[in-house]
Length: 268
Image 1 (cartoon, rainbow, N blue to C red):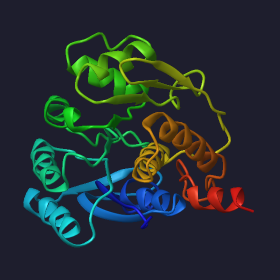
Image 2 (image 1 turned 45 degrees about the horizontal axis):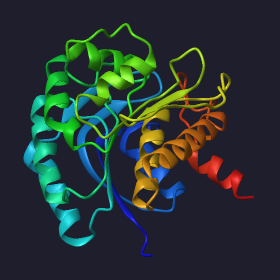
Image 3 (image 1 turned 180 degrees about the horizontal axis):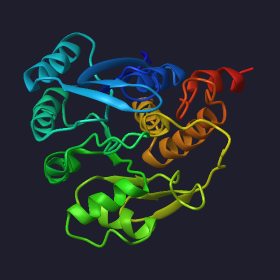
């Protein structure tokens, strides 16, 4: 088959560790061609986010239209959105992609450095306007709690209950990632099954961009034709390996994952 083309709709990380930059590296590691629609420019390094410039909605739609008209889209990964206006633009852009194309939403809310990347006023909009279009939503534990709280539920519950609650908000599948849990276990819920996806914890690794990498690998594997559970298991394995081989020596804060080095080592 022709090489799949996967579109990332997300923000740019000037430090190269997360966002669009992490997505493209993950796509390359999975053997797919990555395309992008940038939603925001961040002035960012391993220590802090010092500035954010949101891309106008019409330019987000124009980027997606250019890709659809020429290259095509086999899967979509959605990352940092930031504002209500951006969410509305992304919803319009998805109409250009087609309903049969799988969509993975990583509900980016807070950067590794602690900077807020999704306005609180936009959380309800994200749920109402995009979740029903999602094949898979991949929150970490704090994001899952924020989503459930925003929807009026009990955000203090544990990961399996949170996944089940988020599933009722529209996505076909929910994967609550395990990086912020006591054990590094992802929770997969498709409405019929709640399955644990265990993995190692690499406390001496570097994790900046791990969520972006996980969701991008998942989208890439869906583009290759994997079912969501198989894709989620592969994403767990590759993201964990990227953390283990993370670049702790880069910068003075949380070092970036290295999915390409991990992929190279696993192939030799």
